[in-house]
Amino acid sequence: MNNNQRIHVTLGPQVPRRGNAFSEALGRLLLRCIGWRITGTFPDVPKAVVIGAPHSSNWDALVTVVVVLSLRVRISLMAKDSLFRGPWGRLLCWLGGIPIDRQSKRGVVEQSVDKFNEREKLFLGIAPEGTRTSATAWRTGFQQIARRAGVPVLVVVLDYGQREVRFADVVYPGEDTAADLQRILAHYRGAVPRRPERLSAPLKALAEPRNDQHKPGD
Image 1 (cartoon, rainbow, N blue to C red):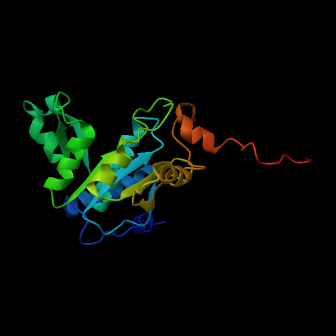
Image 2 (image 1 turned 90 degrees about the vertical axis):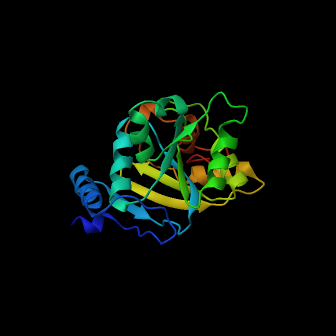
Image 3 (image 1 turned 90 degrees about the horizontal axis):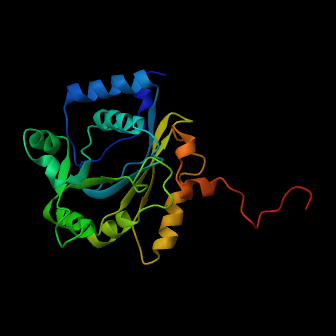
């Protein structure tokens, strides 16, 4: 498989972009070196909340960087404002970092919605598991942000079994947040994390047989 065949995703004109021909070539080279591919459908929208899972290792960040470079897409991340002070501040901003004031009366959800309202284009990356070590539940703030900002949720799957990053679905949050979450979680059924022992509880539950399923011989 050649390098071009590893990327089965195209980006429309509305998607926020960053990088140049050099960074794209570097990303594609690294993608080939690590043996991964990119598949799925990327929505042609200017704003979205981007969620990625399973998250079980620092290696996930490297895979993500390679994908971002390869596609020349700009995905921003929220980080505490203290990290933006000093010489590293400009670098973090260049990398897509957005400062968040943990002391503000306006919480993370409200400040995130503010950023969507302030910008013409914004793809905000969020790890719904919140940690790479066996989270007991998913944080649903990403649903609140998307709903209040009026933007879709782009569901991304990191599958080490297939060595594939899949843009699996685009979900526009509705009134039934539980149903939306179940739809999102279903896309992670069978996805293999780098560290299976650290899989979050909601994703572990996908692999467990349901009580209403009959066993052979019943």
